[in-house]
View 1 (cartoon, one colour):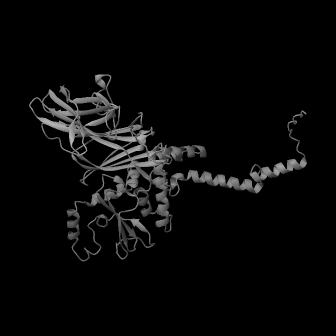
View 2 (view 1 turned 120 degrees about the vertical axis):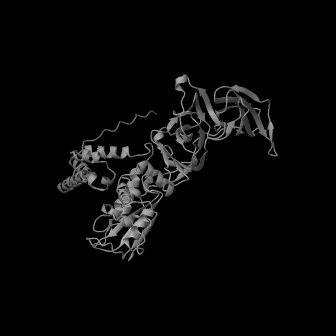
View 3 (view 1 turned 90 degrees about the vertical axis):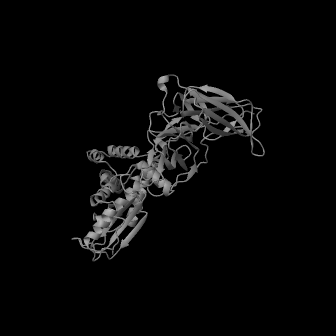
Length: 517
């Protein structure tokens, strides 16, 4: 028995009740507004327009450049203002590929904290303490004397001193220890003091009471800090610090973000045209493709020396099988450095951090070798003119993708590169493969390879066999020059079944605190 298929449903015409029901639903959904709701909406729009027009009158004034303030003030439409604000923050975003604008988030967090901590007759961000806090964060230490008489026409008693150790905001034009003093006026509010004696680390509230003024000036001179120097420091403190420095300092010291360890390789060379050692920094970045997400700072052991930052425009990404690499380079004088490297990874929503020491020794000896590079890949440049020590992933006449660890997959080619400095060519280079025995001793494997080398750059490759036993190996390099001077270098590696991709890290989320508007 066949059945007739059901007829398709046809929408019925709404009657009067249906129309009324639809109007009621539209009204409830906000499609139609009552006169009172329309008035409220207009009022909200006016307030929003006013808020946008007054944007530069808020705490933004502390970080906006004068030309930006002028550009914003001539805008008359909300959409133009909104676009300007987004571009304003984008220019200050040190990590364009991350999920949040870290500098924007940090700025508004500090504004909120200033409002909570320094509110008086005005919002906290408008106070002198709020301004310094927003620009440079919390001081290392505070000193307060509620009964100090600063003898000012405005009256009042009390002084508050903020001590910043390690240069606030990484301002290298400031002293390693900077003091910012605030004097309390009759209203109880603390205002920035330009009194030189209050802004020196050697000031003691009771030390000069009844003592000759000469004692104070002698101590001030002994501190190598002139009055005009203190005044200049206070002026600089009210300037805008570089956002990359602020972000790196915050993550390095406060640890406000979840982090994972980075794979990093630091290798040292001596370019002929540079006075100092070239340090090549290679970072495993996984699938990250924007080099602006990588920052590195080299802090000398001597606190009076200037830390060196490499960041935007310095690192370059090279897409490679097994994980992308970012590489930057910097020429450093001899010293011991503390190295901090930051990677903001948008794909994983995480922040990578590396900290470690680096020794840059002085160039000494009649024959020297660079660090030996274990590489993923080494190719000669196509033209002699392309040889460079300034271009990322280039070392003289070779293009080099360094390996970030000592693991070599069985069946791969062991590629290595090093350079010879000083001495007299030709150089006799002896390369020997060695394997580690169970007792920890090393045994030579096969015959050594001997090279007669005229050039200072040595690139060498050795295919491994799938039959080689897994375990620890090393390559011993002996170099002798024409006069018989010699140097030795060792390149250890581990033969493994398969090599893991670089930059492989767990997925971690940014910790969000406060308004990131």
